[in-house]
Each structure stands twice: as C-alpha cells, then as structure tokens.
Amino acid sequence: MSVTTATSRTSSAAEPKPSTGRRGDRDKPQKWGSPVTYFVALLFVGVCVAPVLYIVLGGFRTNSQITTDPAALPSPWVIDNYSGVLQSTTFWGQFANSLIVAIASTAGTVVLGLMVSFVIARYDFKLKGAMYSLFAAGLMFPLVVAITPLYLVVKGLGLTDNLLGVIIPQIAFGLPVTVIILVPFLRAIPNEIEEAAAIDGASRLGFFFRMVIPLSLPGVVTVGILGFVGSWNNYILPLYILNSQANYTLPLGVQVFSSEYSTDTAKVLAFTSLAMLPALVFFSVFEKRIVGGLTGAVKG
Image 1: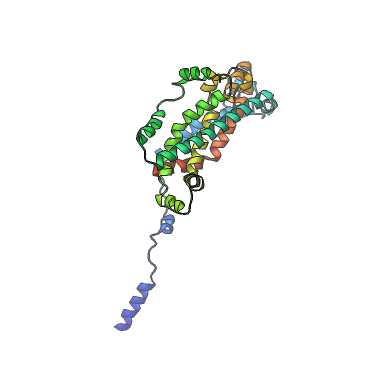
Image 2: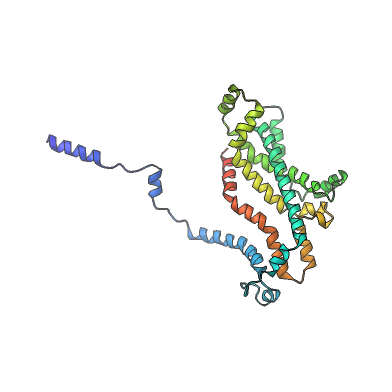
C-alpha cells in the first residue's frame, strides 16, 4: 500500500505543470478576426495606396499610354520623365527650400515643445491648468482658419517672401500637438529619479538634459516625425507667404510645374512623385516609432 502511494506521489510530481506564462500564451494558436474586418481594412488600404501607385507608375508612362489606357501598367517603362525632373535645377532648389523649412520647423517645435512640456508636467504653479488648456485649445484652430490674420502679422514683421515667414508660424502651430504628446511622457518619469539626481548634485538643467530627454525620446521622435512630414506637405502657408519662385517649396513647385506642363501629364506625375517621395519614405521608415510614441503618450 505504501509502495503504491509513493509511486503515485512520484508520478504526480513528475507530471509537467501546464504552462501559464507568456511562452504558453505564444504557443496558443492565434484566432483570426472576422472576414468583414479584413475586407474593410483592405478596402481602406486600397483607397489610400491606389492613388499613390497611380501617380508613381504614371511617371514611367508616356502621354499616349495614359490616354489610351489610364489604368494599365507602363509598357514599355519610360524613365525620361523622372530623369528630366532630376536634372532640373528648379526641382533641386525647391527641394532645398522644403528641406530647410522642414528641418528648422521640426527642430524649433521639438525644442520649444519639450521645454514647455517639462515645465507643465514637472512643476506646480498658478495657471498651470490654464496653460495646458490653452495648448489643447490650439488643436481646434487649424492653420487654414488663421491664415488671413497670420499673413497680416507676417507682413507687418517684414517676413513675406522669406522662409522665416513660413518657419516661425509652423513652429507656433506645431506646439499644441507637441505639448499634448510630450506632457504624459514627462509626467510618467518617477519623482524618485529626480530626487536621486538632486542628491547626486545634478541641477534642474542637468536633470533635464541627462534624464528627461533620454527617457522621453520615443515621444520626441514621434513629434519630430509628425512635424517634419506636416511641414514638408504644407501648402497653404507657403502659398500666402512666398512670392518668388526662388523661395518656393515643393508643394508650390508642383502647382507651378503642373501649370507649365499641363499638356504633359506623364511629366507632371513624375514631378509629383518625386516631390512626395521624401515625406513618404520618411514616414514609412519611422512608422513604428510614431505608433510606439503615441501609445506611450496614451499610457502616460
């Protein structure tokens, strides 16, 4: 009797326990969602991607091919449209203007937004809630609504037909989104870290540069990417501020090029493709960074 009991105890002890950890969860088969969900998702993807593919592929066709069969693939593939645009000094001048405006606007928005967010998130003072609400209210006033008074202000400052007349307003209108995203990141930093840094002799600026910036880097990258893409694609502000073609950015260059070569559809499509390509590649490469940064902002 005792031998049987001991054997049963040994066998029960030798039996492997069911895995309930993360590894066991990964071993479980994944359940597929509803086919309707996938159909709707694919439909939205198609609606978004199809115009971009049409523009890019259209640049590899001739005007006769587009007229004969607008939806067909290039046959044969023609690279003269793209090579002609790339050899144009006008295109590269507008590319340089867009790059300057995008980098300067992004840098200004990130630096100023990070400083403001640090003060709102880490310090208590009067009108703190009102300041944060002011930035939140800025999300409800897009640039298009304020374009006329903004133009008058820029004109009064003597910045018309100047890239600074585009950079400064873009920084101002980019701050609300930056503050709303970065404040949760900075609030999530434990106070114990700041206290430990103070004990080690770090000043407030030292804590800001050594601890705050590295810990909030996902949010900083997110707002930087959004600011760069938004600045690159901005059309309405340069349209009002810039007058000479030497200062045009690429969105304005596309309009001018489309007017000059209105009969050459294939070349216009090639110019449009090259104009939107940098922002498209930039966004695609850092897509996971954007999602991770926004997720962290929501959790914070």
